[in-house]
Length: 168
Image (cartoon, rainbow, N blue to C red; front, side, top):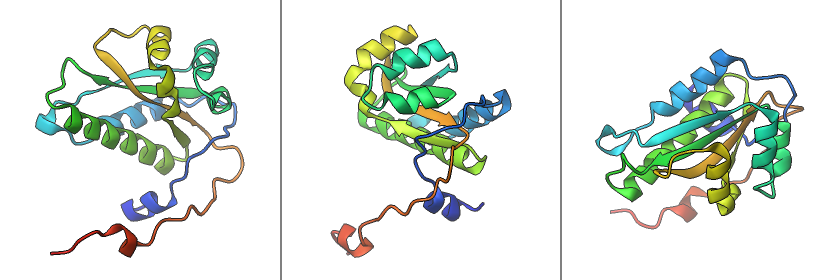
């Protein structure tokens, strides 16, 4: 799968088969994520890998999209390491690139994934559940697993001419 195809065919997967994600696939996801660009190459992202059903259930209670986390055999919590941060906006952009790399690698390896941002409404509770130090700030939780059913869909995109606000 080439890059353009991966970008255009990736979809958020919200239902997963119950089988676990093999350890080598988890490592591939995290490895792809860590290759994202970051300002000064500070790599401000950190990960907590959650496979334990009881911990995923606790996380599921922190979001109105809990059914997605209950269905997924794997969740990856992605954090901004504020101790390594040098410019908040640039570091947030880097974490976004890290998340996109993770999503694209999941898709390229036959996994499905869904980026959960609404869980940030319960950020402090998630950080408590996962026992992370105070310098780690939750950015997202990604549900991951083998898709159940088709992952087709044709989300509409605005026409490019509506998005370009200037040309010089």
